[in-house]
Length: 123
Image 1 (cartoon, rainbow, N blue to C red):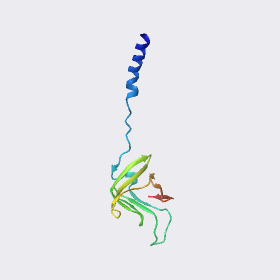
Image 2 (image 1 turned 90 degrees about the vertical axis):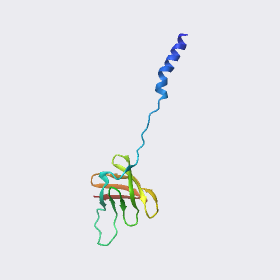
Image 3 (image 1 turned 180 degrees about the vertical axis):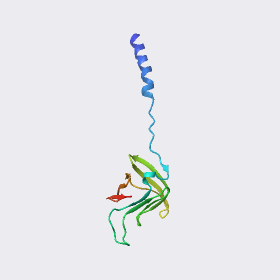
Image 4 (image 1 turned 60 degrees about the vertical axis):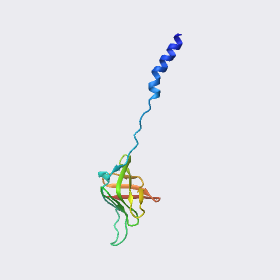
């Protein structure tokens, strides 16, 4: 009898601990862009006038890359790490929503991998 009561008491004590699940809050998409990301990001190299170079221009509502890359409007962002973000927005030419690869920001530098190559831009 004593063992049965002890077993029931231990089950009653452990039941709330095992039965409760922890709520995990996934990163959500926020409107606009983070302040650290806003501005004109360009390649450090000097190019002759009229040649193409890598750049990214990020405003509160737009994400514009070099000429051949998409323009994203209705911008949203998600934090995926320390100073690392993903952007999502509407691409008018394709008429659908697109996401960017992960982009890491510091105060004056931007780093990302795109189409198999590493991109490093400065403000």
